Length: 442
Ligand code: S3P
Image (cartoon, rainbow, N blue to C red; front, side, top):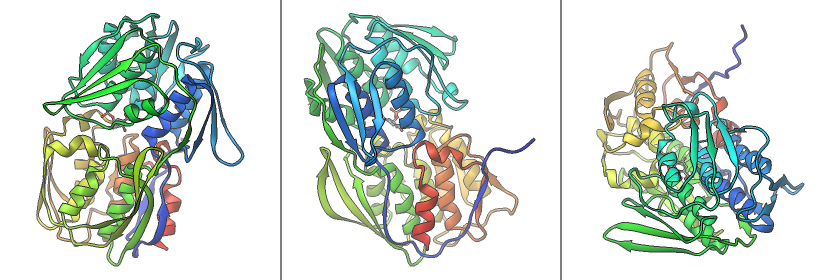
């Protein structure tokens, strides 16, 4: 049988130099399409991430009545149906690998009088959905599926839904956003209480679209109130570059000797930019140039120069602001001088893969010294010396784009390269990763 996966060996690299521009932010791209689909009139989006995850959201919104199309100039046009106007999809909604599409769209469906079945790939079908079905059930939606609470799941929405006040039991922007989106078509005020702040793109963007969203901060908690029966006004959106994609290039430039790279147009919302702070604390030279605002988000160009990093105890409080960046931080730690300890990362076990176990195995195979704990990794770095793995070791990506890209970066900083078993998942969030990397290495 032919092997359709795409293994690739990432070889040690020369310095990364020049300028790169990473694609649009994934979280903002999803929300641009969803909110555009709920506004009456045409929303235009420039810089949308055309990754598989976002395209799954676009297809789903189309299946529920919105018109979503790519224009010849590369921008996207969305003609929305209005809050409350979503139509019954005629077939199941295929979510691929995308947890964000699934959880946020379940929220949207929950307060419409429609029923939708969500399906996904093997990775997504193993991820917990109880965290959204529980609050959305309290709002009156019903869910039909297996007892494990995983996909495939059918969401039977209800209109009118019941407004709730819900304290998030896990720090999750997806759960927060699912409830907020359900609240848009719910009479009264829907309240989400966040004990630990997470990425706030839904709050910022909903306010931009004209929804009434109130945010109160008290004793370190955030209380978010969404007024229902909202009317959204179409917007012109420019999506900033994704800090989670820039992360791979930032770590690559720090690790590879002689590198001097500018990563342009990186979104630096404080709820997302934790990795850059941690890397600076480790001794990384990362400068922000040309700080500005794009689409209501702080943005800058990052000037990154090769640096010898020092191991660090990462404060678990910073985790929500870099939740997707731990795999590549582990790679940086593997090359740092001394020990890096991470704790409080239980959530990493329910991402596209179990990122604690997957990275422990991948980095050990690549020659790093790693101890796996329940809630994080302890990594003893090489002090800058290249990683030397066993010749036949191969990273198991487990359908996780960020594992593939993180180990690609480990390959650049290795003696003999790192083999990644399947590079196809990269297309979910960063379709031109391989080309950009090759360009920066040249
Ligand atoms: C996201 C939230 C995070 C993140 C994911 C995108 C979002 O997930 O890992 O890649 O766009 O809201 P959790 O809410 O599960 O932490």
